[in-house]
Image (cartoon, rainbow, N blue to C red; front, top):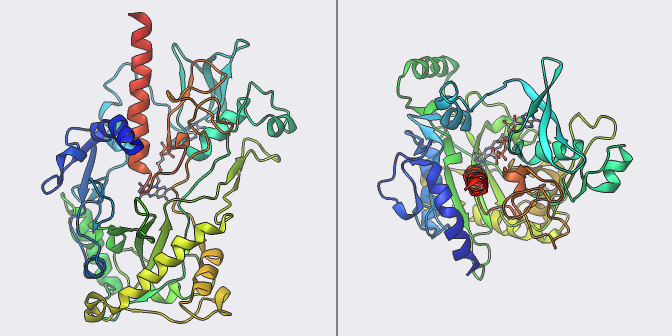
Length: 449
Ligand SMILES: Cc1cc2nc3c(=O)[nH]c(=O)nc-3n(C[C@H](O)[C@H](O)[C@H](O)COP(=O)(O)OP(=O)(O)OC[C@H]3O[C@@H](n4cnc5c(N)ncnc54)[C@H](O)[C@@H]3O)c2cc1C
């Protein structure tokens, strides 16, 4: 019932911005083709990526579109891509209209430092800093905060919207006492499982060959080849670690790596240098928990409220979050027995990582230790300006994304998600943008008619 309600309300707003360039074979009910944001497959898949997808399929995961009716699938993922290149939200939405629309002004290199709110608690503009000078911009109708899940709560708190106790300690006058910064969620994952590729499967090439690839790529009008791909990261899969679950609780992403660096002690995988990522001889499967129970919190930095906020991620505070990760990791380890792995000579490196040497490699205890010692973000943080009914103590915005207690102020970005979605957060953030815009247009057109 709830699933149907959600689908009816937001699916049109996903499709509205989607320009799917490889829609053949996909169900058009779930994909748009007329939007601004290009969605396509990368044009090039390397051998290890195909190996990973084949292994998933061999293990029983159906090949198909996990962005369609059923998520429990594997495929070479589509991404925000056109002609072999990533397409950012800036390139998709802003650049095409930047100098064409009279009602759009872009101030680059500017940071909003405060939402201006009058004594009647009506938002009427913002203060922002550009080149060290403070400017003011006034709103004719309303102010929309869209700084993302880290910066939107920071800006609200700097403007007096947030937990009373915290703001009072920082001598910020409280305009609306709300749980801003709480309910922080992310898809936590961990590093430390390493797949080694033999020469015949590795994509490593010499430095001279790499330079040749880079040169050729640079001069291609329509990009193709290894540099126009996302390597094994593209071979994504969603699994249920308990067959009784209604939907997948784990996503698996496999990142390319350099074997030598991957085995270096205490190096989180984000710091491993491979240049460029298309050329690698190891892979790091990331088991990503999609339904976290733990909640983090974001606070202003008391030493410098305008500086970087303090983030308490609180990953795995609820130990139940470790269960799907361990099960997902065991599933990944089982792929070593597939024909896909065997025929490519891919094997798991069985040397325990330093922090977990006390445990036997591959056991539950070892995997829990990896998760707790080599924890990683997937950068899918959401929820810090939670949408919810006024009865919800943690809610910051209502179901039209209006900030409680302040008029003419909305938050429209990933921070409003009450619960993190079971997948990557970029497309849902775009959807929130489209949905929010429709609320704004609806509100102001009804007001004058
Ligand atoms: C390294 C990385 C990799 C990722 N990879 C993926 C991926 O592969 N797939 C996926 O689905 N998701 C991915 N994500 C997550 C995805 O990017 C986010 O979920 C999404 O961008 C959130 O959108 P948003 O509009 O809420 O915030 P953002 O996209 O962060 O937009 C906020 C904007 O506001 C600006 N801003 C912030 N504060 C201020 C201020 N005070 N004044 C002026 N401007 C301000 C910022 O500069 C930024 O442009 C990744 C994130 C990161 C960091």
